[in-house]
Image (cartoon, rainbow, N blue to C red):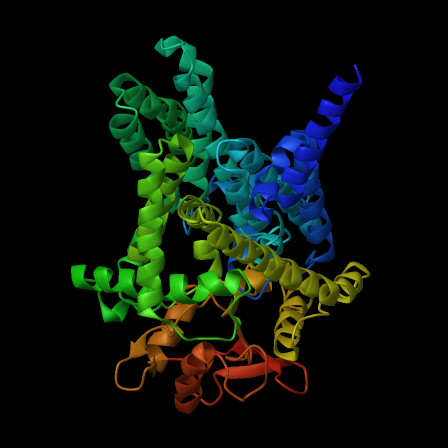
Length: 568
């Protein structure tokens, strides 16, 4: 008896010794064995919630598009059924319109729903990839989704990104259910009905939320046809999307008429310059050049800025780094194929498709982090999956862990620092000082917009360079000016008579002339001069055509001009 107890004690000691000597790589990889799934999920949800609260932004961003979505929602409600949003995919503005119809114009409520979308994205990414990829790979993916400062930023802004991240996670989750069903003994098509219907719903919602996500269709077809080699399932998956998309198109056509969400976007994307149609249409070589330019911007600059390894003021790009990162993505995808990790493979195909399409069709001048942010969870997953398969020796496993800690640590530091800095700003905003946190140029512009809403007659129609933002604070419709209208090619300014005719035809009565900084961080004297280049030729030819009715601010002021149309 004593000998048996002694043997058990020795065995237990050996187990403890093995655990204590185990590499940190293996200890991290075994966390899923030591803690329950529920506990790990709650940890990531709690991290995301706390960081979203301390980084909560109660203001509209200076980036324009979030205000555009809110304005579109208002127009859906106020102008129904004579308005349909086609500047981008329409689902998010339609969702905001639904909220607006229920609770009214409540910006904070709209933002809180994006916090909810963040938590849902954490939930569905977790449910999709938990135990389908090594835990050592799962951790960086989940930390990016739950605490990256850009992801957290969009969780309190009225952009589409937070909703899209949630729907993307939901789509991966539904694909996991399909793959699990395929891997089971049940092979009849009828057994896939529930999983297929959920996948079709998720893919449909992705497509109507972000136009570029149309790549989910070829990614899905390639995966089912070539990887699973199942023709019936390939056809059924396509039908699962069409049973949602076709009724949607039918209802939209009945209510709004002949509408195409891609028409307006494709028109702009086909131009060489999105703000200057006079430069003509893009060529095939131009689209190829876009791909290389965007690859360098997003893979050698924005990627490293987003994970906190490069200053956001850094403008350097490196072609060799972009090439290397693209090659690693392809290598990781190939290994997922060889290792038959089906979900990882599908996610990789979809992500590569999303990146490639974005890099080809988007003009490089936009250069916005959010363009690549939605692809980054799976990019990170592919990179760490590749490294986990290659780093087998003790040295490389240690190197992997250092890379992991550096990756997660840099994001924790950057997001927390931003949160600490943000707390006094958001408290002032919630207490009623809605302009606190903006630089003086923006404060003056937005206050002037508010003045227009409160003081100009209902018949007034005010032109604004940032009309959606003017709408948010002016609570009235503004006339949008995105580029110099009726441009004279010799001066790059407006032709005065043509510009006045254009304004008169559009019933414009007033103009906002702001002095918005080109460098948002400091007043260099250089400003966004689109409106200046329209008004200056008018004033030169017709000195009395503009009558100043209000000035907001002493430094970096914004002027409200009334247009006095010359008599012919």
